[in-house]
Length: 253
Image (tube, rainbow, N blue to C red; front, side):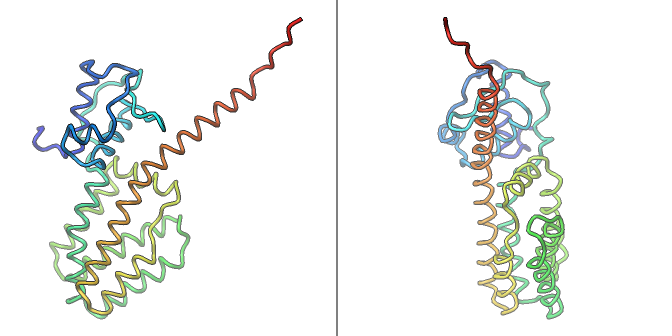
């Protein structure tokens, strides 16, 4: 079972077991992100995914400027696999598959396919950045390139990655947070991919797609930071409201 777990799940499982066993008592602060990365010999994004997974399971709480703390009230244990794939892991896979798919499509995509891709892009550029339509068009754009490779296996592999993006609770959590914080698909990056495909330039198509997906990864890193900041603002606002509504002390005689 453990061998089949993804990297962030293994980290989350190990820390979760430590919490259950009392190695990390309720209310205690977990080691810093950098220290955990060194201990588990993984990247810091993997540690962030593990922390988000533990937070979704209500095992820890993140306090901005202070760290990650073990939750006081522990819920019933749940299997780690139900959170499925992590967003950073997904983007890494997309970098591998979609970068090469774009390069292949630049050489074999039909003129009709390129024209269809351009139509999707125009609709993306013309719709509301926060609309569900734009999110649907984002998937259509990438799938049009995958199908433009004229390889059923490539298209199926990339479609599976997009399905995981929408089905995995951990992925959904991070991408929904991105949308709430105003981070949406960027048409200008998609246009660079389209222009490379239109020019039949496989190397530029690969570079443009990889640059776009690297930006997605950077956005996810920013989301984890912005989420902490937003939580801190809410906590400060709540404290201010409590202070403002508290009765004034009576002057002493």
